[in-house]
Length: 287
Ligand code: 13P
Image (cartoon, rainbow, N blue to C red):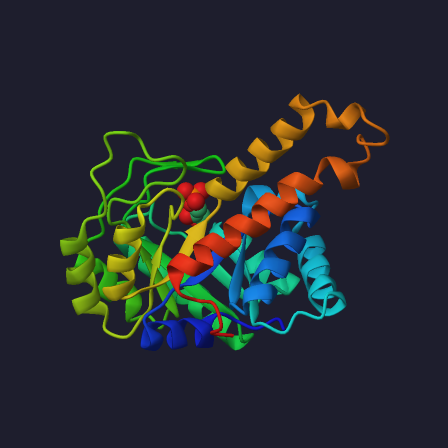
């Protein structure tokens, strides 16, 4: 069932768990994520970066694929199709293409411009029943070519953006996209608590969910994080399983080179990893 992400995140905030955002890259990814979430009855947000959208030949293709796959597989859990780190233009394009949720990432603008653009997009999105995420402060590292040094969010600025009527808010709290470096200092819970105090009942989003230790994930959820984004870890398990298949020479046995066989270990690895994350985030049986 394709829905916007507001209700599932409001429920997660009230129920003290987090809904996973799993980023999708192609048809196999989408199918694996949907099957995993249906199996354990977790609501899910399918994240699509602008780069991944382009790779899949455009937002309209993605929306059509997700909609019909959701129906054909008989998915019963709530599924939101969400733009990840959208530009102003990309956000508008996704609203038109049939996405049910968008993230406008105006964090690289000064706060006045971030507020002005976010405000405009809140209206456009809500007029079409689409939920909207905004961002304050930077998430470190590189997400699909979009780089940031990582800047912890200012709680007063978070309040300014939350008050615009955004449905959920991403805030930099020391989190990083991609693999965490060995000397990473961890999440800054004092900044997280100060933000929460300012923004009240607006659900918070934790980007860079790959590789954050379980105790930090649980503490972040207890402090008001209701959505956690995961991309890199699914890519890593897919690559590892595919590499093992090829290195074992299985692509040379029989018709092991058939893409349906070649990609099977990787897609199974994605399903397993999604279920692992859902167990930590507490979103199983919350659909
Ligand atoms: P990771 O790639 O670090 O899991 O982060 C995903 C993300 O935050 C997408 O916005």
